[in-house]
Image (tube, rainbow, N blue to C red):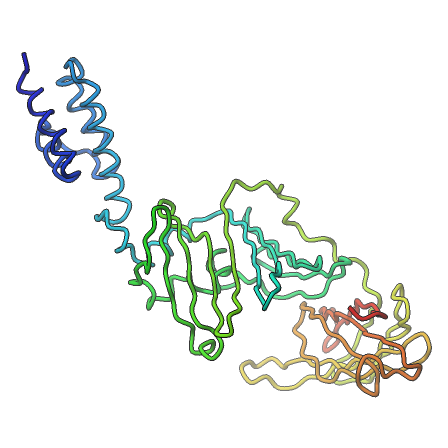
Length: 385
């Protein structure tokens, strides 16, 4: 003999086969009235507690339990996408919100150029720090205070402000600002394509890129709302491809620590707007001396002057390199540079040999007024790539 409860549940089950929404409404309407303690997670808990005593003794317990699971899934999906199970209406702003919460990201950057597919660099973000490794063994380390670059030999090549200086998130940086909350013009953007597992958003190029960029496509996980792929298509058929994953970090905290800068190949105190200073170079085969001069010029946007370095190298043979004039430096920062022969070019030295002088000057403060310590890290590259 069927009870009224049995009849109601059978009707609800039939309604489910016709329409999911009808099922949710039928079951929710049949529940006893109780105060809703929480509008989100508490709603499912309330449903389970309310019908437990009524139907768990019924002969169709399995049907009722299945119905509750269906309700939970329906309600959860509806809440997740902001009140609608239609994923085609998920605005880009929701993706940006989820991306800002990512505390671990592993990124692969590839470039397709003609018939070549090149691994450009790989990046990891965890423990609030970022490491980027290029395809030649060079690396950059960012601890949210300082960004430092090292070449494949571990020589410090650059030092400057953190890429996170303005409070950006990791995915905001790695997507060139597409996941920035400041891009309000993208907030209402909806998917161009909705698949079983992914949403694909399409964007046009910026005004600076429109001459060579065709479009940008970002693929987002349907459940996580995190980007898994970004493809920038060029008008000539080439493209850049970025892939993201969010597995638990396998790299220990030490992986994100930069190597020691090491001893420079030469250093000397240099007075601003003073005479040239000769700096002896050690442990850089082929190079003997660096000749530097530090000048100051008024800054356009600051009361403090800007500093410019002139630098020339002398080889072991006594050959003079080309002079790099007016290299702008900031205090406690370094940058990577290069120069060839005084005649111009890397193979126009007096003996006709190839020489590429690679160097990184670092301007450091001293306790003397208008005097700075210039550190030179350098090496002579005697062969072409």
